[in-house]
Length: 71
Ligand SMILES: [Zn+2]
Image (cartoon, rainbow, N blue to C red):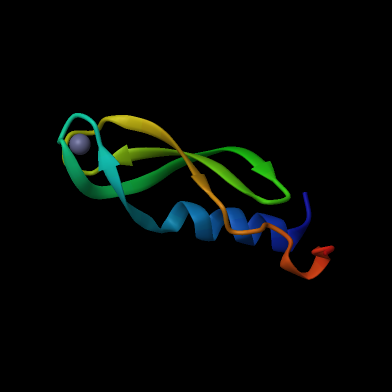
């Protein structure tokens, strides 16, 4: 794994996202638990609700390699 890619993953894990939680029934802050899969078009993450600790998958559609985009 390259250094900048590792740095990207660390940034992903450091942040939180406002996502709909089925258990809370509303949008709550979710913490990044784990990176499940990295695709060219985005990153699949395991997220955890900071209110009830329910875990869910979430797709972050931020391109992982913006400099390598081909149109
Ligand atoms: Zn919740």
